[in-house]
Amino acid sequence: MKIGWLVRIAVLLLLAVFLVVPESFAPLLQPLARYNAPAIYNQGSLLDITLNHLGITLLATLAATVIAVGLAILVTRPFGAEFLPLGRSIANIGQTFPPVAVLALAVPALGFGTEPTLLALFLYALLPIFENAIAGLSTIPRDVAEAARGMGMTGWQRFTKVELPLAFPVMLTGIRIAAVISLSTATIGSTVAAKTLGEVILAGLATNNTAFVLQGGIIVGACAVLINDGLGALEGALKRRTGNAGR
Amino acid sequence: MIEIDGLCKLYDGVPVVDDVSFTIGKGDICAVVGTSGSGKTTLMRMINRLVEPTSGSVRIGGRDTRAFEAHQLRRGIGYVIQGNGLFPHRSVAQNIATVPQLLGWDRARIAARVDALLSLFQLDPGQYRDRFPSELSGGQQQRVGVARALAAEPDILLMDEPFGALDPIIRGKAQADLLAIQRRFGTTIMLVTHDMNEAMALGSTIAVMDRGRLMQYAPPSEIIARPATDFVAELIGSGDRPFRMLSLDSVLNHVEPGAAAGEAIDCHASLRDAYAECLWSGRDALPVTRDGKPIGRISLARLTRLAARPR
Image (cartoon, rainbow over the protein chains, first blue to last red):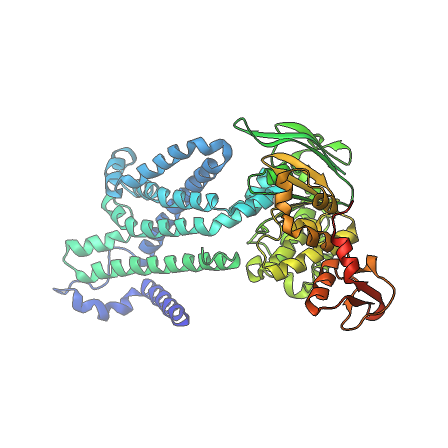
């Protein structure tokens, strides 16, 4: 466990150094760039591109969280139960469309750039967040829900003091899955001129420069692993706190 | 204290509780006994309106429960359920503080109440206050569940199979604790159980339910001596009747003057224990002590008379 965290911290530091002073890693990547091509991506700052990539992922995941969790809360209320199938359909449709298809369809409407990418990631993230939020909200132990009513909590108090806190770790699982998927899927956004790390990979493929492909891929991969593990640790801590680790 | 009047609950036209009426006196412990599906839990849940009656009414202290808002009503009634239902994401202190917080008590008063209750249930506040329910044993969780129900000093405590999940030894201790606390606060208790032994041990009155109907409502001795229906008799078990009768009273009330040989029995032991000791040790009488000092004896002949059906 401890060694695992040391490795993660090392990866984070290495990533930060690479993004701030990529030139210092040039000798390492030079053997991969043939015909004296540059070893480090030179058509924009890697740091800017990475931050933009993370920003798009964050924005899409946040928006999907707000909508999907809101929808899940609605359909798990007694008055909203009949909308559960509708909610499921909406989330499923989002997942069914491949992000590439969404990009292609969205470009005529939204133009080139960040917007179609945001839309594709947003739609793609809805389902995992929605399903996990429903799972969390509908698996509150019976005796706990019963006790909350029997103590004299109002519907709103039961929701905010009992249901939401207990469902939160499960919701977080969905958000984590969606964030990691969005992070990797965001790379294809560069096909419609969104400023993401896909740009670096595509440039490498176009010029047969393995060094570009590798640095773009490694940055995305490292970010994905770090975000996954960070959110996973938060989930674990919350679940341990509530004694749900085994569930 | 609790007047139940013509209470009915129908689910899809099928009566689950069928025209039940009885009154639980102030400070009574009423044990509601029945097999599963007898409607005993539904009956209890209609007292604090977790289930709304189809017809009939419940009055508490003379006031119809429908005069209150449901959640306000529930805050005034302690509620303990099987499996205790502690909030797993809240500490022991936060769990116990649930109802006082809902009622808007100030922090100092809540903290003092939590510590007092933890001490009352033999849980050191310094050690247990900040633990989470998952860090407690089953018996400790159960005690915290009862402490939570008593936190806002309710006059009435509803308990649905409160000891069902405990092993026999801890259950005996928990029952004794409950009786001690009930005597101290004079709380009126309605307790649902399927276990006739538990009902006999705890109840000052027993209500026997079968298929939604109230079969008999009487003190334990009356239930044993004169079961109203075959079902009630079956629930008691004819072979156990004399022993159940003896278990209802303590040696203290039947001490005779004189002395006897052999090991003594404490005056707070039940007559059943005394009888068992006579038979097991082959003696005709046992010396009785109070706080370790001899105060007389109890004879096998007397115990045998007491075990007979009362006339």
